[in-house]
Amino acid sequence: MDVADVHPIEHFKKYPKRFISWHVINYKELGTRSKVDFKELYKHKKVSGLEYDISEVETYSFPPLFSADLT
Image (cartoon, rainbow, N blue to C red; front, top):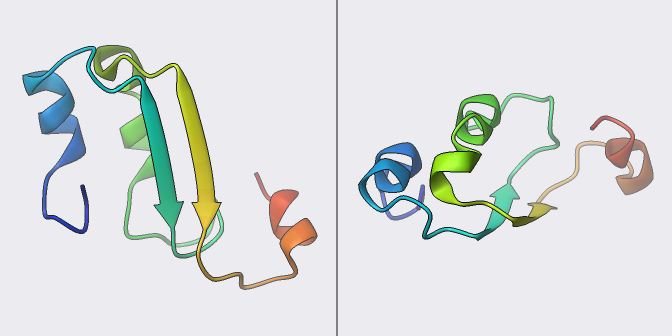
């Protein structure tokens, strides 16, 4: 959604309970500076209908196992 310039929270409110799975791609590890505000996004998981999510990191700043411990 971010790449398509669609604001996900507005989309969740417009089409509630239709987004049961999310594939979240970040370009940095969780907890580091990011383009997407994950805390705000996940506050709306109920209205979206989220049941399953997959998180992916495109570029690691640290070794992958160390990065996994940052979550």
